[in-house]
Length: 61
Length: 261
Image (cartoon, rainbow over all chains, first blue to last red; front, side):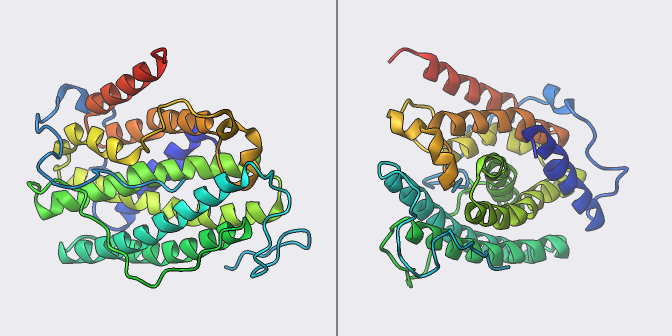
């Protein structure tokens, strides 16, 4: 499986899973690639208020 | 499903070091598989907690069940990783003390946002990166035993990654994911190991490492970057999460790497 195919398998597979779980219909689903570009950030400045060591998952691989 | 070993492979419980690993690479393999063992133990706890939190939120029952299943998977993976480490000569045994994992989301977020943050960090980023690494290792591995180990883990990691993308899709449909954009760099910073964007000693670049389930360092970095660019960032954009801050974070890392030392 090539890296680019992972988009289909994981991202689209996940979206399909959400649809089958009944949490979003295929019509209301995501296909607005790039729509966020104009949204801009929220200016929230990260998780400095969290007091946690890390803000992400630790990859074992 | 238990991973079977061929006759030429080390026998389970023999504690005989893997016979075909060059001595200078054996500690690298041991360190990598011991680290994975620990990470899988953490993931077991994290997914169980996420399952409970998803249920408490009244989230999709299917996703809460998947999170619990992921927790069970990670327990099996932890055992498998420890066994591989032991085959390479690691003398340690399974720990009995309970594992605790820290909260990774900012405190100021709502509970629902925290769960989304954690699923995006743990699944959309980390598990997706893991799938990319496992795919590469699987293509390179020649030994049947190593292939079997990698296949068993990869099979489960697909659904772990999808869990995050599914919840993100669900929350996007509810219209509440924009807050994530500026937080993705923090997730990435917490995901990368300290040395990923640094140069390393030549033995850590040995292609032979691939046969022992370990990526040469620069390959690991290039796969990490390619997966961000080709899968994670487009996936986030697909769900209307702004990736400009994350792309800027990555550009900065790559610029630092290009600086002469």
